[in-house]
Length: 220
Image (cartoon, rainbow, N blue to C red; front, side):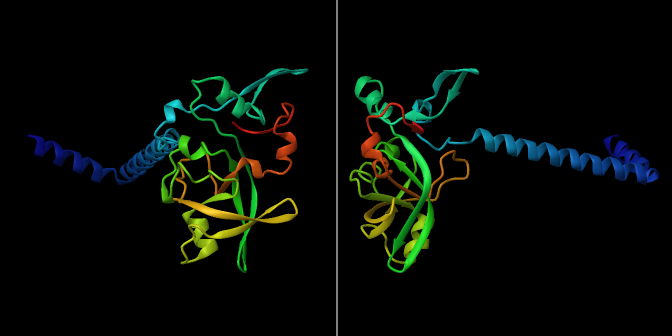
């Protein structure tokens, strides 16, 4: 019985080849669009899911009242992060971060990289896996640097970068920094991207602004 139904359906499709072709093309396009939409939505919802403590990580927003009404911004004053951590025991880790261009050189090679200046808690909060070094100690010293595998290969080639001294331009000076860690390349589904990470204190004018609650120049 079922075989007869298939034969009849096949004959009908053969009698109306033009309509059949249009319907098949339309069906294929519809399935393709549905699949692309599904993959796109799945990708968007997968952002930052690789962080082990993602349910405990919060981005600080500041409510500002101005002439145009109340708005929320992601900028924070420089002392806020350390103050929150010192004041509230519920705050286990806190990290400030700024994204900027970092000019780095090693021997005769110089690169402009995507630099994140952060606090030592950065790698304790976010689960960026280390290929070399440790998340617990990678930014303990002010002169520590962490590179991604890709940026390390661009700067050092086949040479082992761990423990090597590079120079990074801070203001008008080239200052020495030590490579203390290599993290695996950042996943595409990450809202935080970088080539290189250093301590927040290396930002220009930090010493003059570290207690300034009116300088809103970073995220927390």
